[in-house]
Length: 189
Image 1 (cartoon, rainbow, N blue to C red):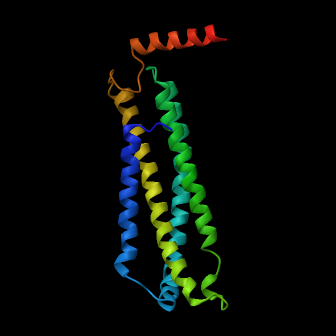
Image 2: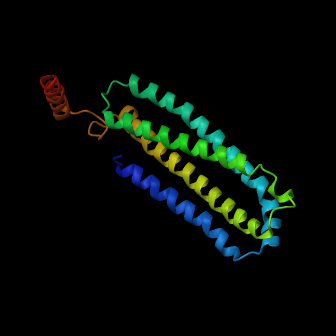
Image 3: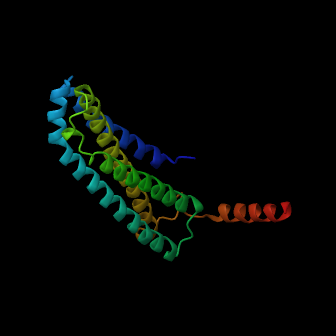
């Protein structure tokens, strides 16, 4: 998949956020099984709240993408396929974040802290896993929001401010190239 400059910036922002949130786990230092169990019991409600918030935000973003498509298709300007591919990339990424958050929510609703047969050493693994997964989900949502921001900013520039030289707008050269590509495809068939 070809990534635009804005997608790379969004991925970089999400990666930085993931690393910052993940660094919090290392600030705590090493914890033993018993400490991890205590910390895990205290953090599970926060992780569940995070997952619920991310699922709600992701579902809302998917719905708002439909509005963005409506605005895009009703504009007087002719938008390139790259604009619609960008929206599709946002939808795919958002869906991945939504599904991942749902799975993490379900996994951490298993009452592992109340199980007597679980070895204490497992709690350390589960604790660090929970911190890592919550950092990844947080970073994923930040990526989606940044991608959406760049797309909305582009639409504002095109529709609201009337910028004529935006990369998402067809220009006269694109129209000529588009006709040539279509005629070449017709010749091939």
